[in-house]
Image (cartoon, rainbow, N blue to C red):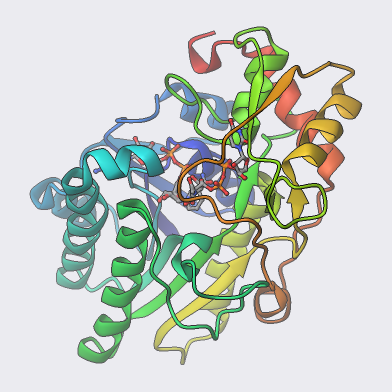
Length: 341
Ligand code: NAD
Ligand code: UD1
């Protein structure tokens, strides 16, 4: 089975490509490298002992996409390609809507023109917005996220729902990721943010390796156990395997038509202070930190109800917090400058 993976050179994409190869899928990666390098795929090939077809291109370029669909007989698409920096999305919202929404529409059009109907979309817990209560469950209505990034994910989910009405053959899965962290256990591939990391774990790891002085903990006065925000952190390899489980689910459910959403998380909320402690314990490193004001747009706490994915996809996040920390550190210490190292 041939799978087209848009954004496959990126953080979650590269780990998923590895899992796909290990599960005997043929993979074609389509990526414009705006936030990644092909080095990640070279390393994936070495780890898997198999090769990946790589095509450099933009999802907004329908002619280039069509060429890929004509050249390879694609059976399914996993769509990671997107811009993902929440703060930046408020500064350049049109680029986010152009890339994430228009880009997804281009991809869906080219799929339809080429009679490809199996689609897995990288959605996010952010689609639950601010109005839903935790734990989030898939039966809840889509919310109103505060950032253009989050809104772009809600818009694509709505587009998928509309497509199922107009295209009776469409088979879509929206995977709503909670907070993926960690790296492949080899330390050979991992998260390689450009500039100052926005997300917690890459920042902690860069403090540990001496690239940053100290961590700022954004707020210690939230209504949580220790006052810092709580999130549902899951290992990126568990998340990668969630995509394989979703593909297997599509393959086993021939009659399925429409679109289904699944939360991919552990079901546990972990605080920022607990993450710092867990990282220190797993790595024997001290993480200097200071408490700073709250970050705009942060919710106090959210985590998944992952029962639907457990039951229907036969998927469970199985790797421990300790392993997430050890693997983050293995990647960061082996590659202090990411893929440039
Ligand atoms: P990433 O930036 O590492 O990967 C995205 C990849 O898409 C990059 O390789 C980038 O070069 C590529 N890309 C971006 N725009 C493109 C375009 N127009 N055409 C072709 N390629 C393009 O990000 P990631 O963390 O791996 O995230 C993957 C997906 O998962 C994204 O859709 C993101 O919104 C979603 N997601 C991520 C998280 C997270 O915490 N990392 C959480 C929820 C959802
Ligand atoms: C963020 C986005 C979310 C997106 C996800 C993946 C926001 C509001 N949400 O999730 O939409 O899907 O990234 O890209 O940006 N923290 C610190 N210090 C830091 C960094 C983070 O204390 O230097 C705290 C944050 O306040 C938060 C927690 O760590 O409580 C996790 O932050 P982060 O990794 O950015 O993820 P989210 O905010 O959950």
